[in-house]
Amino acid sequence: MLKCGDVPLPLPLGSIPTSNAPTVPDKDNFDEVFSKLQVVSDPRLIVVGSDAALAATLTRLMRTERLHIEVAYVAEHHSDATDAYHLSSGARGARTALKGTAQRVPLIRDDAGIALVGCATVTGPDGGPLVGEAYADDTLLFSGTTAKMKIIPTPQMPGLRASVAPRSRWRPRRWVEGRAVQLGSPAAVVTRDEIPHPRELARSTFYRHHEEWLLVR
Image (cartoon, rainbow, N blue to C red; front, side, top):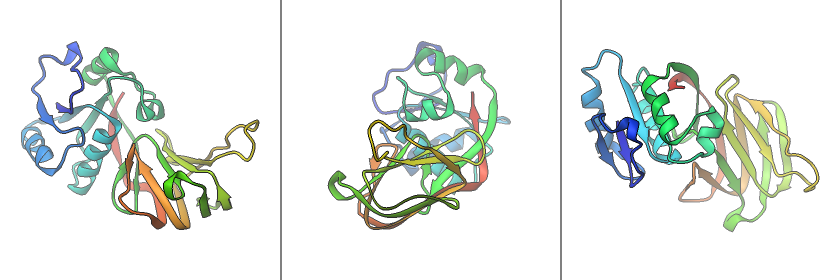
């Protein structure tokens, strides 16, 4: 088990061997965990922490070709990732992590090789309007200006869904499913799982990785 940050440990997990890590774990933290899992015939890694911790875990599994490891996620409260994958949180989520069954689900990543597990939000500089053009597969999401764009992974194919802010507050948000979302913009600010990208981007793509990951549900 990888406990990330200062989140409380649910009681059902009290007897599980634990490695402690920062809120967003780094390479050294994963090296320690992977060394323990490599001697297990059916490895399962329980991640206790935030969506960012889960995203960091999947990113490292993907980059080190370890997507055969089952991953269970236990968040203290509901989050974008628990909503996206229909997961419980707290003690109930901990019981699922112990007794649930791993299922193959699409792995969504961006062109920087970073996994997305909850929600990516794209705006203009300083949270202002987003200028540019974006597609979900062949469907135009917007061309010109919109307030912001959201990308969310889905547990079923094609793998993600995206939307832009509705033109009127009285209109419901329109979601478009696809394998990939591509954006071109003079200056876009991308926040993945509450972690902002360090600089503005002219292009950004989120898409389904060629391998799936094993989510315990």
